[in-house]
Image (cartoon, rainbow, N blue to C red; front, side, top):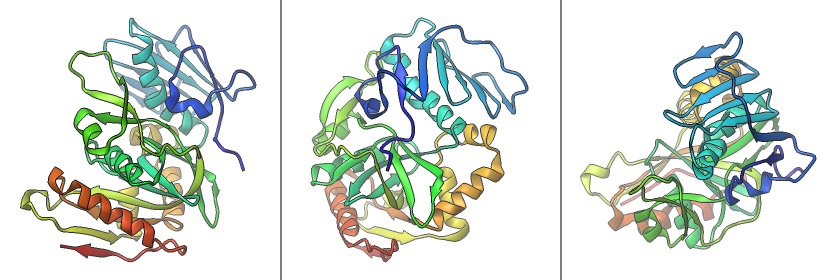
Length: 314
């Protein structure tokens, strides 16, 4: 079984978060500084900061770097005055996502832990607490699997859904570091006062491949009630498809490179194999530990048939 979906050789340090992908030779993908074209031929999507066809894509960071991702084999960057840290951030984020789509891989915007080869992933809108929850579960002894990006190869969806870690370091805000006890590393960005940091979880699992067992969509519909009620509700069919669509990493990239038909066919294959549920809990920090313990218990109870029962608690 392969441990990563592709290998990379880079002329810029991409940091430890994608270390499993980095090789010195024999790479699948080359990352290098060079000339970035101003446009591509026959783009299926064209905008101010992003232009793509099924095999080529241009990405521009306002006031900074530009990236050309070509045929799933090269990423060429023009730093535009940005530091190595800033260039690497966008390379291992948005440009990485474009590369995945060109290589027929589906990246999900999710963080995850792994238990006995089974990956339990958490997704939701920006600020939902995906990274913080994964870090907190790692502090309770779970093995951390990935942050921000979880990669699926549709060709490997059979009776199970194999998945790969996209990034092996966390990105956490200052207050989340305190909540989770994760080890603070370098700042994510150079900007003064930007208090988000790369971090190493308490149990940094070495595995980069596993079976996607569950995908929990984080919600906080009861946040305004100041209630300590937690609920996990299984969803299926159209509702599961909708939630999974919202979990796709950079959905506009997917539709520009793959088209809607291929994207939805892939998502339908995933929900036929993976338990999808909504984890609704207050975002009140006073009950954060209780909510973490609740989902931790649910993971313990998760059944091998991939369909753990819905539950609620007050």
